[in-house]
Length: 107
Image 1 (cartoon, rainbow, N blue to C red):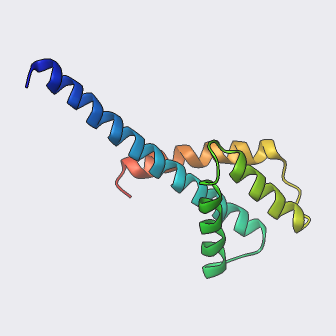
Image 2: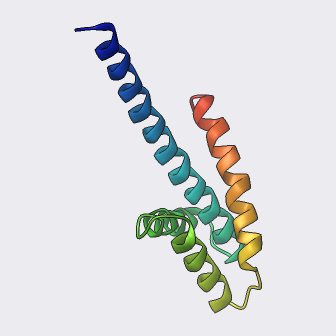
């Protein structure tokens, strides 16, 4: 194996690891958003955990954040809770930063 092949293999492994970490961070971010929304919906305990899981699953429907934002916005609106899409997107950003820190800390 040449030096170039070894370098290429190293880059491929790093890319795969980065993608895995990105997926984990986004899943954790969605869970945190789900727990935040569950609190606003008056859910706690197992019900809050189940709702957070629904939000994580909703994030797998399509690429990007639109599916998560749409679900949470609709669920909150259905209960008469006024939270705008931009507010939810801000929370997504906050929770992504928190998720990345938690993952880097090994939590």
